[in-house]
Length: 273
Length: 82
Image 1 (cartoon, rainbow over the protein chains, first blue to last red):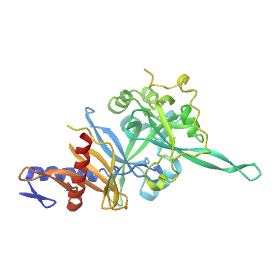
Image 2: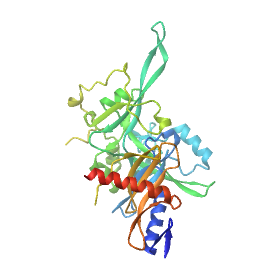
Image 3: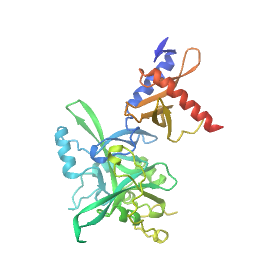
Image 4: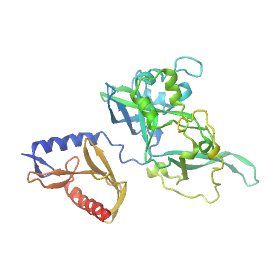
């Protein structure tokens, strides 16, 4: 006879509840509505099993850390220097200088899918002084962007396991891919004109479970979701502190231009058909 | 089996609970966030020796809250079906 929370349960039930307890402990990202990358908080990823016949959901710290980082301090410096929350799909295997990129090995051997229920990006809006002159500072209007008809979707990601010597634990760290922005994201993320690589179910499967060539992996990582599949709304600026995105209308802020969406042509629209 | 509930809100002891259902390790659990900032609670259903279901906190230790909030969740789901 075993106990669980004051109730008498069978040994089998006790074991099952204890297993559940262990699983829940590994999922402390579940109560977070908004992940701020710069907090390097845990997020949910899908990783294939070793035999590539199945996959499992795990959690990883958002912000890739290479194996050679000696300690948290060095990892922090690395993340600060290279902003490893994301990788550019164009640089998956080769960096800007044409040399082997820091993502190459992970792209070959440690690919994953990063779960998302919505993206938050801010539009930079010019501000003007009292005399009507353009000021250097810009105002930011945050948007939450989702995919029409999908409660959640997947970014192409790569992960790396890093050993944190100070606590004697392996830490799984992750980065997801970005590609050239579609028309809506060019308007919203107008400072960088990039967007996450959001994959169709078929491409997500290929990325995670199969062994495509480097050329094919780059092609998948460059995937651009068309604007007409996205929905966007402005949200309260306190989302970082509130931990959730609350829709908010900014009366003086112009609406997004959606007139082009039916005619949009993208170089890597793998969502067509 | 019933579909996973989309996130919902309930009132409990004059505070608002944000609740989300998840399936983990083959079991359904509810993740309960308290608007007051109280530590989030995970609750699920166990089966006792008399084959009766009971609400339990996961991990153990917050049985009273689990039982009370679990009952509210059950009522909420039952009412939605009607």
